[in-house]
Image 1 (cartoon, rainbow over the protein chains, first blue to last red):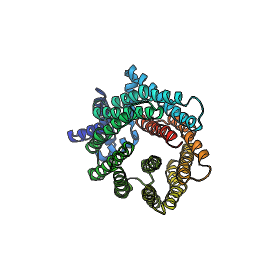
Image 2 (image 1 turned 45 degrees about the vertical axis):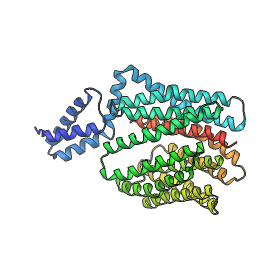
Image 3 (image 1 turned 90 degrees about the vertical axis):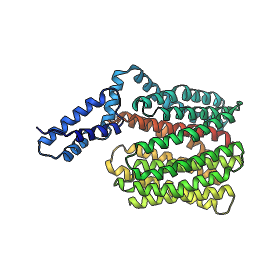
Image 4 (image 1 turned 45 degrees about the horizontal axis):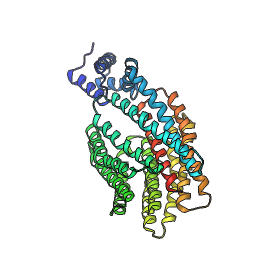
Length: 286
Length: 144
């Protein structure tokens, strides 16, 4: 019977921790299970590396996360309830917003009701439940990231609603939202990314990306508020992001997979979408 | 092919950024830059990248098609609106609802069918759609 050394067990434990398995005793059970499987494979004559790779391949990506999610579902009623709420409100509220925008452009009656309802669902149901689910999944680890996310997203969406409905206080809400995004959320996101990253060589690239994003978003705020320096900030932010961050980052992750990854498509589409919408605003505001 | 797709995507993003800066400063040539960048992005990069990704597993073709259609319609709407081409109004209206009537149902079906339901990805996609919805709401006021 092959037996794993302490270092090998420790390595598997670290891999599990990296996959954010942190629901009470689940990690010990999974560790025990995986070690047994690896030892069984090693009895067939494989080395530790081969055996561990085989087991990982056999389990598939994200299998442990999935087990944790199922455990949470089975053990916690609140989690199950929150997840259902999150799914329904997550599907309904953006759809309502889209319909409301259509009604507004067409000047059909009822746009205001759809829009308020959509934002209401978003703020009261989707955001808190989504953040609860994410927090449960990464128990305790990223509390501040989610708190700051809520703090910046909530005023921002409320601000947009107020702006669209011409209620007073829109400017203040948007300023708070963007301020919290730039000062709290994005730096925390960068910190979490760097702390958890498996590839240290990506850190300078990510820092440049986040900082230029911050400058760009701040520029948008300046533009909305008609403060001086907005155009320069937007220009600097987007130029550095697209001419420095994007090529450098793509170059770094280019070799990771044989095919074009969804992450890359998502990144480019997101960037172009963001630049286009902010241009449309810019043209209309100035 | 993979290298070509990566490079073309990056070039599109660069052309677009330069084009928007030109547009905001009202320098000549902005229109051509933007048109080339958006058309090239929507008609070359997106389909090529999606095809490349699809060929890995050759599953869930409907999801890829819905993504392509949604992006094509949205980017043409932005192009029509920025360039003030006739018919922009209709294209914008179609673009406002496509993410919700074409992409969202396809994604929900895909998510319910997929064996490995990753809730974090679901939340990420929902946040993207919320972003699109909020932006739509703002644009609907700004574009009148």
